[in-house]
Length: 110
Length: 116
Image 1 (cartoon, rainbow over the protein chains, first blue to last red):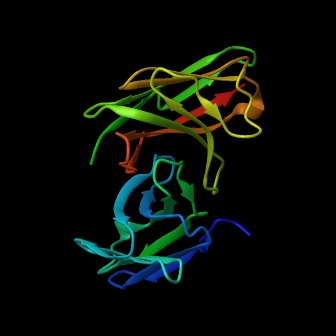
Image 2 (image 1 turned 180 degrees about the vertical axis):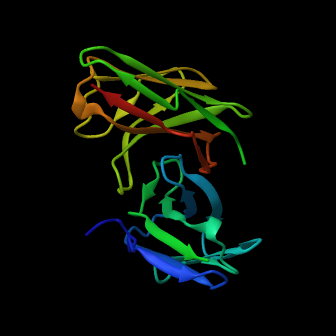
């Protein structure tokens, strides 16, 4: 079993829809949770950074962490074609290396 | 967010030659830098972790004599692919983390290496 599980998709939704992306994990030591967006042939771009459980909102993006269920989510509201990319969840236990999910390929159709 | 600059963005080299990739943190001091390799449609594979002024820690299966990592300053780390072969062709990405206890990691733009 992988430490971090993420459905690779692909996921295709119409423009304006709410997108829900999720990851589950098995290591209870993880405390720091991140979501990255990666366009083709580019480096990942940090979207959201969350410590421990709770919600965090930034514009159209909302990150949720449920440590009791070992489950994290990223919601994208009013999705745009420019949101089409691969979304990677990542997490760590502190001063340790990041552990990444496989990435979900998302396409927003105009 | 913080800026990490990686150079070059793409490079083509002949088999048997060496290639150096640079990773710079432009607006912060990076105590730790990471080097990843990414195959098409796959996630990032960590190759090594480097801390300023000390030897890099390589992941299992990564040849340290082939992938030389130097982290000479708090803003610069380099990855040198020595005696490159076509199977080393890949997308290499660096990331940098600010300070101890802060685990936000920022990524460079990536380097596409093609060995012919």
